[in-house]
Each structure stands twice: as C-alpha cells, then as structure tokens.
Image (cartoon, rainbow, N blue to C red; front, side):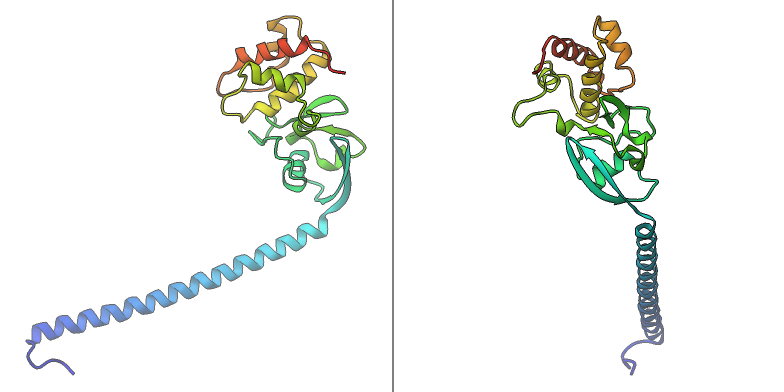
Length: 211
C-alpha cells in the first residue's frame, strides 16, 4: 500500500526504485546460477582431462641421484617436469622452458643436458644427477662451496643450472682460462649478470680434487 502522505511523484520514484531493486536481485540470482553451472562444467572437463591423462600414462623408472624412482607419466612429459612435479626435486629450475637459459641443467650419465628439452621416458636406464645429489650430507660439493665463497649468485633463479654446468665444465677440462670458462658456460644465462663471480667460482673449484 502506498503511503497516502507521499505525492504522486514520490510514489512513482518509490515504485521505480523497488522495480530496479527487484530486477537487480533477479539478475544477481541468474548470474550466480550461471557461475555455478560454469564451475560445474569446468570441474567436469578437468575430471575428464585427468582421466584421459591417467589412461595415457606409462610406468617408467628413473635413476636419480643414485636411487631408482618409479612413476607414471604421459609420454610427452619432459624430464624437467618429471623431476619437479612428480619427484619433488625442485632444485632443478624451470626458466624459459625452451632450452635457452640453462636453468634446468642436470647431468645424465655425466653429461650436462637441458632437462626441458628431453622426455622423461627417454631417460630410463640413465644415471641422472640433479643439484640435490651433489652434496654428501653436510659436505658440499666443491662447486657449491666455491659459489658461496665467491658470492656467485644473486636472485638464485639460475644458480642450480650454473652449478650443474660448472661441474661438467670442470670434469670436461674446460677451465684453462677465463675465456674458456665463459665459452663453455655460455649456455647458462644469469639475468643478474653475476658472470665474473661465477667464473671465479669455477676457477676456484677446478683447483680442488674431491675424493
């Protein structure tokens, strides 16, 4: 019932406000319903995708840091993703994910590779070493210790890849000069430009002989 004390103009405004409020409420309910339907559809799609992924997964065994690790992965899963997402070895970093920065460098049968460019299923029957496998308990690898001494890192994003590449460079015997070290470490990018310290760390570590 309209208030008889209100003028026709006031009553009209009141009816307009009530109608607008009702329309907004209906629109809100409809929007919420649409969001719920979209969420349910997304969940259904995710469940279907997960089922397809599991169906296409294959069992593999990776020997990582001296331990045989069993897991199931799709054939398209890279070694990098297998290490980080399946085995929780997150020391190996995902940088560019296309083989340009070297942050994902690991050793496979003693040779350095970029783990984002190789498939996990291709690296069975190989000895894989990540940065987590360098130290012996609390005894750091000489390269790790040298990186600390020479402050050869800043943000740390590239550090594990730099260390793994440095280990290989020393084993390969490419530490005769600073220019040689720079050349053979050129596949590892440091966006913080800590290159002089990295080179110094490699030179220092190359002097040490680990038993």
